[in-house]
Length: 274
Ligand code: SAM
Image (cartoon, rainbow, N blue to C red; front, side, top):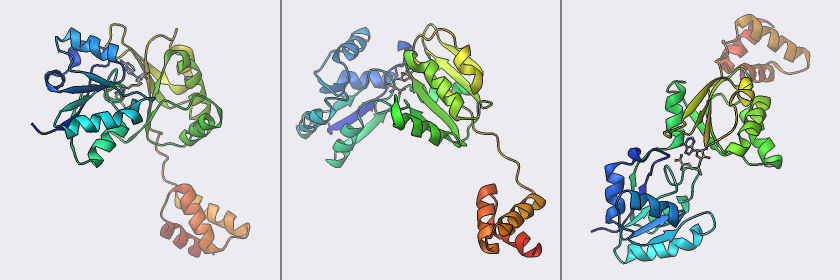
């Protein structure tokens, strides 16, 4: 058999969500790379799968584990990469392993499984538009402030992960940074016994979600589209910029960028109004 690395998705709560193919692969490989041997050992035991041997790939060990995984592949073994829950590498370790194995010329195969990001997006009902996956926000300091500021004008749907002890703070910070009227969902404990979804405007979410418990995904809907500016508005803006000293060309460029309209259209209006 060809040596291969399988990236295998595991359940995010409900064990019934684990695919037959995922189980079959874990039952057939010679080595399992996992975040936590006890968590993965218990998953294997629940499905009657024998432990073939494990190597720990977590935020501290990932770099060191790569050699062991490459050695196994070099000997002709097949290796599965899993995380504690969901898809490895999605706000989880594993990306360095995947990159190193691919760079070494071995096959990398994905065995998809549930992931909280796409599950929450589907639950949101916000449509099939573009989204940005933020994962966890930086916990504090200027990094967090900068990330929040960068989200202020983000027009696409935004998906974030959060832990129970930080969910209220994060919802408040998001409401301060972004338009409070944007629709959002706060999805909790997906696929588990206490799954729940709160729906409403972002400004209400922090107060409304109740006692924080379990794992959370926040999905914020896309910003409402601004109606395109009419000719009179654009002409007035150009006249104002020119009165402040800008050339017609510069005024047209600045106004076009500000209103998100074509530069040629604004330039033509500007030359007509001179
Ligand atoms: N690899 C995982 C995936 O594919 O979604 C994510 C792992 S990340 C370390 C854990 C975070 O994912 C949690 O803090 C939570 O934000 C989100 N998450 C994972 N499982 C969830 C669930 N069942 N319900 C809600 N959120 C979940």
